[in-house]
Amino acid sequence: MSEEHNGVPESTELEVLPSAGVDESPLTGEAVQEELGRLQQEVDNLREMYLRKLADFENYRKRQEREMEEFRRSANAGLIRDCLPVLDNLERALSAPCGDGDGLREGVQLVLRQFKDMLGRYGVVEIDPIGQAFDPTAHEAIAKRPTPGSEDSSVIEVLQKGYRLSDRLLRPALVVVAAGAAGDAGDATRGEGTGG
Image (tube, rainbow, N blue to C red; front, top):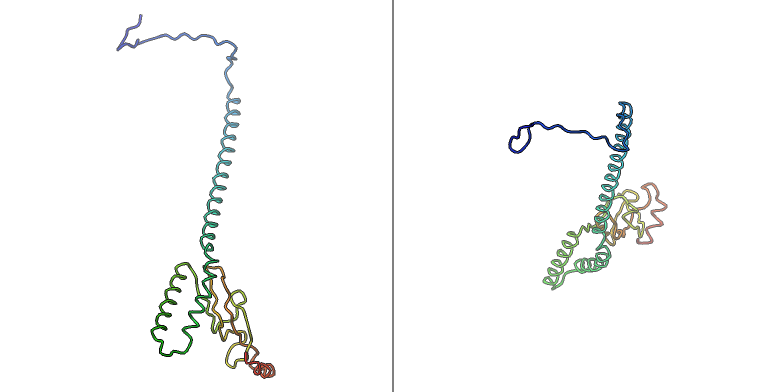
């Protein structure tokens, strides 16, 4: 008879009953190792699949962020492009000779400055390439003019400024480019009659 301590018998004997239909032969060490290897390979395959899916998702997330950033940068491009002629007209008004309209001139200067500041907040950058080499990706040449002392294919006059929105060209600068090498007097003489 077993003694009870706090309601739990101190020694109990368990009786093992034979199970019906179960092979009682113990697994051999080789079978256990084979099953363990198979399970380890399955775990490794699942881990590799998980890491691939995780990498795919991370790539997708980064691509989405880049596309959203590009969308944000170019979302207002049409609106800004439409505002550029207004900017041009304000600059033309300021380039007119001054008369008695100093107050008008100051007002236009204020509007122009505010308008440029507003465009700058949206990432619009002015392209003013005077003295730079002609760049067909950012400039549109309207004319070539022989200009002593200027490098061939350098911008000597800007007829209309160009603009960029971040890295995207909104409008190329309309420019006049220096033509003819210093020793090319024949071309320079022919070009002088055109007046640019």
